[in-house]
Image (cartoon, rainbow, N blue to C red; front, side):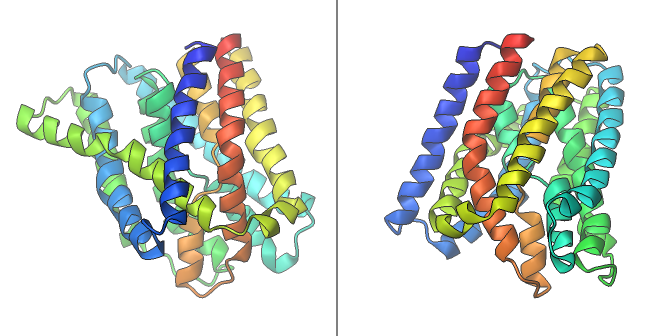
Length: 307
């Protein structure tokens, strides 16, 4: 993967985000429309993209690669959960706000943004690592995540773990492990649905940026410190540690991409549902998403040159 390939693909993503920004400013995609499209992406097209990636026939990863992906996923989330306890104190956040920064550290946008970006700029085998990370994400958010947000008072609802994304991710791993071949009518349908994800998800990110309050986001020094530590230094550290440990280059650059993702939407959705204040999360989502367009481009390009 060359520097020019990464730069070109991220340039395409920037244009797709710009289209979403434009459509929102023109009133074509308003809040209600974006909410409905988000539901389609989360519950239909993104799960289909996961399966389509496995069914492409270009994934040549082995069973050992899947096991390595699972171990990396466990290690990744163990580290970010620990970081979620430490970083809020480094940022000197108010005691009642620490849980929000905790969630921001752990639950980044590895699904809504991570899957399409990985498909756009990384080799086909990268999808194994992305899918495994998304499975752990779902398992953890509806257990660890809701507990942190509720201050230990929120009841864990295990039924919510069984979401379309989680189910499709697990099924995709099963298809990969057992080498299952779906009938062409099913595989082609899944592929057509999944192919729409990249445009829809990038467009929605543009809408999020257009609807944000840039002044309040930019002025929040804690979010900028978060960006430097969580979205820049952690990916760089991940890269050099995995390179020193002689991990496969695809695994290395994929995990670096996962660590470089901006704040995810799920903590915000859960906070709104439970009546929590959402100013910190909404500001962080808008600013980190905007910055990630540049930071991911620079980091992935640099890593690809070194590898």
